Image (cartoon, rainbow, N blue to C red):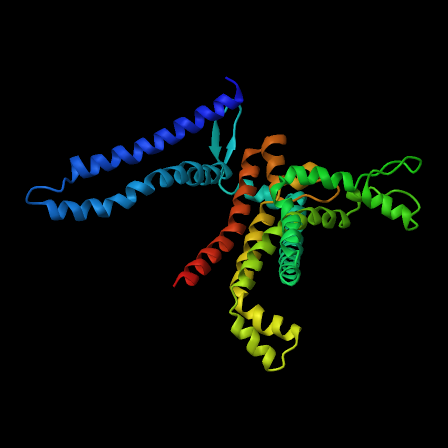
Length: 335
């Protein structure tokens, strides 16, 4: 079947199944299980109204269980076992974790992830806040925001390809298509640099790609938060003689602190799972390995499902506290 027709068929079937499920399940609940008639009509109405929310939640709970809970449990079991020839497996306890912690590449990946955590969320949040504040003061601010938000529409792999061309190096006797090397030679550089092979510096060049993508997200969220600050508090501060820096840091910042934390933690989760950029640009070479790329290598290149699953569990353990913190803050905001 042609992909276009296959997509249309999938949409039609999916929508029809959803509509059918909600219609017939409600009919079953209202007409068969708990009909609103007879001596128990009042009790039946109360019971079905207690059940109805779960009826609507059931598809989502089933999907989450199938695509989230089951993979977590299965990955945990794989991390505690070893695959044998023929497809069998045996329980080995924490041997895979011992092997994982003894691997230098794992510690390199963990160290790089920690470096990404220090740089990327802070840079994205700072740039997003700065741009949100500045664009609200200019007439063409909406156009500037659109341009800055545009990289969010590009996939991580697409962004990696774009920036790989920016960092491209050609022999000295050829024209440089890489913008960075062209500028480097223009300002007195002796020969083109292979930027992605320079240890430590290459990690920052990779981080720049994610910062370029995520700054637009931070800008949009923080701009909305800034617009939600009551004008009366800002006007009162100005009347009291506060300068623009005092208004920003002492009036605006405290009022959007919760939003800043949400943006920071959301980008932190993205950083902990970063894979596409590293895989497409360096594949973890030249000391740029990160945890997700290390996991992919162990699973699909080295074929070590035990160690690969153990590294996946490490990533999940690192992400979980941040998710819990986000949920806690979200519930706190709703009270």
